[in-house]
Length: 182
Image (cartoon, rainbow, N blue to C red; front, side, top):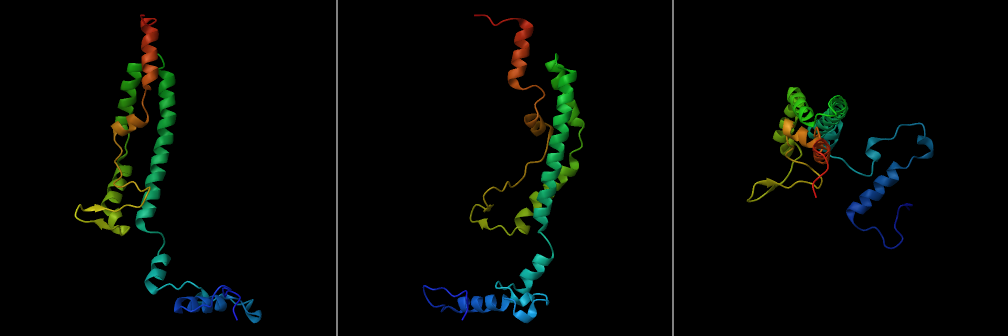
C-alpha cells in the first residue's frame, strides 16, 4: 500500500496508477542509500525528444533575448553616465547641449545590438513554435512578450535619454528672458 494514495477515492485511471508506481519506485530503499538514484525513478516520464531537447540547453531565442537585454542595460548605464557629464559641462546652454548630445548619439556604434535584434525578429517565432492566427497571419504571443523588438536608433535613444527634459528647457528660457508677463 502506497503512502501517496488519496483517501477520498481509490486510484483508478491508468495514469494515476502509473504515477503511483513511479513514486513508489523513486523512494529509496534501506539498502540503496549509497547508490545513485535511477533516472527511470522519476514520476514524470520524458520521451527521448524531450530529454535531448532539455540536454541541449536553453532555446536559442531565450539566450539571444538575454543577450539583447544585457546589451541594452549596458548601453543605458553608459548613456546615463555620459548624459550627466554632458549636462554638467553645458549646464547653461540647452541648445548647444541638445546638439552635442544628438551628435554623440549619432556616433555610437549600436550595430551589434541591432544585428542581434534583427536576428531575433527573424527567427523568434519559428524557434519558439508560436502559433499563427488565421487569416490575419499574426503570431499569437504569450503575455509580456515584445515582438518584434524595435531596433535602437538615435531617435529612440533621444526619447529615452533627452538632453534637456521639456520642463527644464522652458524653465531655462524663462530665466533668460525674465519673469513671465501677466
